[in-house]
Image: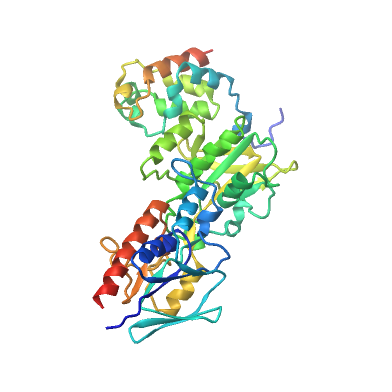
Length: 339
Length: 108
């Protein structure tokens, strides 16, 4: 009988924090390792959440308030990790060594770097921003790329998703509804602006999402154009000229915009890649970790004592992430008691 | 005009900058349901007139959104107001009232 009660959680985003809270309640010794300088991951940088517009800060505060007793390290990487006598021995970049019986990987995702899709002009043209930039703008109220009273604003769906050429064949799942949410928010901020969403498919799969889409059409008058933007150019007045096909009428379409928002998708994090190599965890073609069973037990890995939660196993909504974190905590608890 | 042996075609590109939205806003006031269309095409699939003429409510709405007013009116001329599209519309758009108002506002 090994009486090690240490559990190492890699990643201090929503998945890692929620699992930490649950496992701490079960009296385990939980250590969270976060590579950035803050807890909360992308949630900490977001303004409001779909579909109801709840403030991201409200959710983050709930997590942080419940985090009593959990030890965590910020700005810390895992330098090495390997199996030693039924326990995982992790050496952190701050010099600390942790011997943990179970490891939860909650290494999350990285937003697709929009500049990789050069035809959209992110980082080249002044009025092209990403979905994350827009959230930061909603939060802080300033961004020099957003003009004072824009008359036309566009959103491009599926940037870095469903795109074989840049190596992300998957659908990022959350950007459709995020675009609809952000389109409504920007229309609220600039009521005189015309807002266009350029989509390939609108995937309104969750509860309340379809309602939000209907609201965007009915109350906010957002124009949804089925067709992917093919190229963006700038005119002499620094406005953006957008070209796309309106595939429903089969006609090429052109519009001049004052602001273009690119819906960057969910890509694998570099942290996950490193971890996968160190622990030789299997991955799927899309680059995300492969679960032991994709239907019945998504939180299990192919290695004993290693568990997953959140977007390290593919794009996911926040509620899904929290559910997974809780079920991973349950699975870890069973594993700790059995051994 | 001198025949140079070639001709220029006009562009078929829709320019959304040049859209005159005045009539469209009047139409929204008369029948706000137009905003609910998600272009599923059920109306067109069931359209009695559409079997023999180019009638398609889905297309007419799209033509209006892209600024082709005459195209939209021409498109709906074959409509006999039978109301089958109202029955099949999943977003319960009042299609007959919409068609009547399009013809009223946009017919020259």
